[in-house]
Length: 173
Image (cartoon, rainbow, N blue to C red; front, side):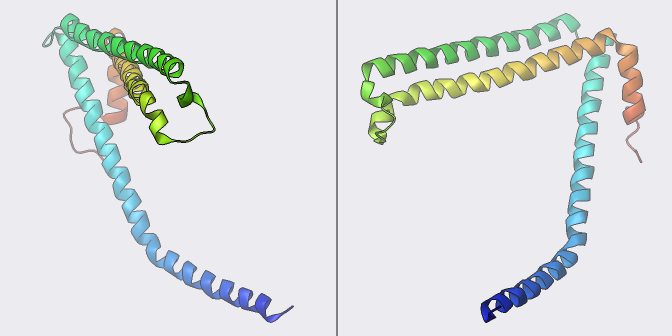
């Protein structure tokens, strides 16, 4: 065993000791930060749940017209579907046309950025289509959660009160 080995052992011990001391000093701050983030995220979830509960109660009692509201949600989902499908089809057709008109752009071994300029429009359409697809997914989830809560209102109300308490009660332990 030479001097380089022992130097590595000493550096590891000293470095490990310093890192462990720093970790022990920073631990309370890290725990406090994570606890505050947990409280903030739980409060945000509670506000979202109370807003959704108020919407369901309004739709159920007739303060808001149920059919008009659900029609608005459905029209948003359909519009996002049309945009997503149109953009994805446009991206596929555009990519096919670009590859047939500019065959040099499809050469994978030549990375000249100027030859890839024609593919930018189909890529933009593809990202618009992906955004539309995500929007469709979120809209369908919202539509389904509203219809489920309206159809099974008693179960929804019981589970809401069990988890969040009374909706008007802001002081929660």
